[in-house]
Amino acid sequence: MLCPEVWDFKSPQHHLEIKRSSCMKNEIPPVISTHYYNHSISIVFPHSNNILPSLQNCIIDDSDYYKIECLSPSLLIDKEFIEAFVKKGELTLLSVNRKIDVDNCIAITPTGHLVLSLTVEDYQKFGLEGKPSFFDRKNHSRYIVTINLRDDTFTPSKPYYERVRRCLETNFDKKFDVILMWDPPDEKLCPSSVAAWFHSRQSNVSICHGKLSTRINHSIPIPIVTEDCDINEFFEWIGIISFDGDTKNGNADDYLNTYSCPSPNILADEITYVEFTGFFTRTKINKISKAITDLLHCHQKSIPWISLHVHGFADSPLSWNLKEHTYFTDGDNSYTIVYQPNGDYIVQKSSNMNKLRIIQ
Image 1 (cartoon, rainbow, N blue to C red):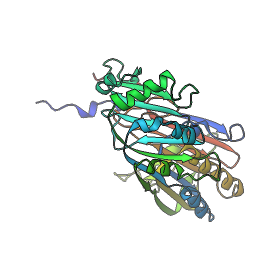
Image 2: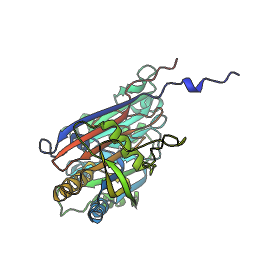
Image 3: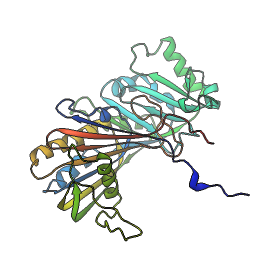
């Protein structure tokens, strides 16, 4: 057997987009409000000035989420559930322990859409109309079914509701492990109410806690964001800091690492990296984003920028809005925002390509 020329393999197709904007024009960056399923966040900032405790408290506050094991999807169209949690506040739900390219997956968006990503075998038994997966539109081995739970006509005794109920209860016997969070419309309401509702219906509900880690590096050169700087090199530097790479070397004679900090740069006394892994709704990310802008406003003379990286779930059926997501060589759907004291920010949006790779 001949060895393949692995060195000649083309790199996986990927979509990378960079935009500049201002918080004065858009208080909440659109990339945050349209990205629903967030798995981890990481924040990088120089010259901490004792802002680390404030950021950590903002991240940890109300960060618990809930896991339900062996959930029947038919419970998600219960009228009481829809009225209490889908139409009021924002409910975010995602199936876990599933592979988006081979398994059935379900999700509820904070906009009230129930999305079922089904294999062709289960779709044919399901009985509801869907559309072929964008990523498999030739073979039609996967279908997407979307149901608007907030539609006024989606109510018991109406034909469409009864059809959906019958299909979920009779034709679709699959059960899912899911994670969920509910952002109530009023601060007086407790987010745990949704867990209590499922528990009262004999569902196996457990509380989940995120994992926080912090790292501080001292006496390190950091790049400065200017109109003339190479923003791609800046984001590359953020990535190297995130996995604790060596950014100080710059020695051309070093075989393993010749990396040096992009220009222009300054020497920072310290730089802090904070990472939290769990499950974040868009509302939670909005709060963290606002906390960052407030901190920058208070320390604009000493902190040149703060970066926020948000990574989505690799096996989520959606990436941004109702845009379908899949997993080929990776399940990347992430973004990085660099905030500046003057209110400007730069967004780097990363996702796998919505195009099948052609193997030659």
